[in-house]
Amino acid sequence: MANLPDMTKHRGFPSGMPGTGVQFTIRRANPKGVTPIKALPRHRRPGTKEHRIDAAFLHALWHHFGDEPFERGNLDAARINLLFGREIVPAEKDFDPTSYEALLMINEKVARQSFPESFEDVFEV
Image (cartoon, rainbow, N blue to C red):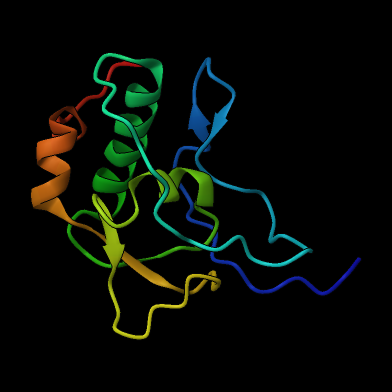
């Protein structure tokens, strides 16, 4: 097997959203290279399954890391990219979008406006 880059595994972080097949984490580093973090367009979609999934991911991030910077590690790039540049922002000046060690943080003001349910103590799935 190829030498894979080191990747922090966030212990205790939910692996995905139950009943959807949507993953929040990846099992191992990508042997073809790190998937870049980049903002993806997201349409307003309150009440949709996609909105619930993004809200559940943000809920997990908030309750795992709070307002502290966190390492990208094994967090799924596709999930991050739907929130990136809005609810999730770089936490360092020299942000490397292709590094598993890149530091991110929640933009709490924006996140609370977009997904107020993510900040509740319990998120019903």
